[in-house]
Image (cartoon, rainbow, N blue to C red; front, top):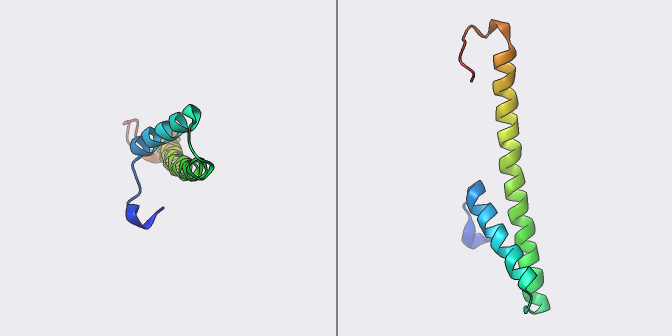
Length: 78
């Protein structure tokens, strides 16, 4: 990400900004350079969303594995 934005946005922030990027690209009226910059920003935001989702998948799989393990010794779902 850009140096001015060292902090990774939350999934919700990235998704919201990505939605805005798509809206602006669809509306048109941008220069080629602006369109390319927005496209690149959208690609970075999509990657951030994918990282968040992948992390959630890993956590869910681990929780489900613990639940399925009869030696877990605990009846809580997670």
